[in-house]
Length: 234
Image 1: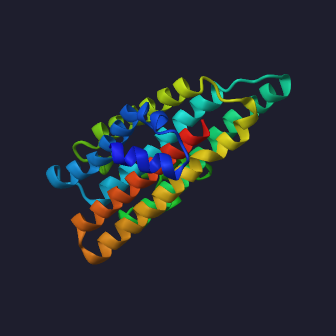
Image 2: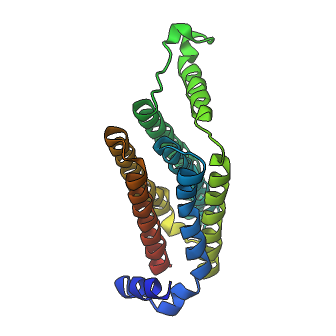
Image 3: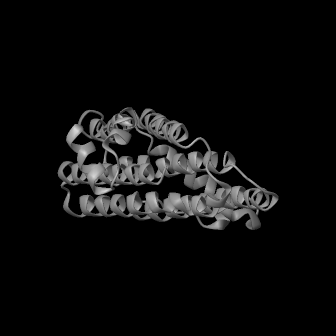
């Protein structure tokens, strides 16, 4: 841990003592990222189950980003107005992103096939709602033992990091609202790309353990890098 802190501090030009103050956040982050390996080796998880966890984590990232937006300090009426617009706008476009990515990824890798509109128990003009409900039913079928617990651990991990950030910087400035609305994409898009590639390789080669181990390590590295970058900007 000390070697990692010193290396990260040198890489991002931080005071090592600043990162040491975040030791608990780093430990919890690493622990949360190792949970999928426990599921793989002891609970019989497949690559698609781990992809599901990473997809659910995107919603967790979005939730805590909403907290950052809603607690941002506004110094004038212009910033208050921007905040009133940015908070619901972020909730909408990030939710759409997560839904679309989930639909595409799970349709491709989990065998999900949306039913034709005429087979749905809803009026034609509500067919999108019916497909969404059918898709969620499919997602729930992927919840093998331990998935919900893993999601809760991810939620706690992000909560610890969020609390640490508030301790370092009590309130975000209203001037940073626009940047905050897009910052989650910088974190979740690379993870989704790496995770989808890992699942694709796993399904193509049948080499589950080695590929997933590489995937988990890569995802952990992305999370640690993002955490350190946020620390350097605080």
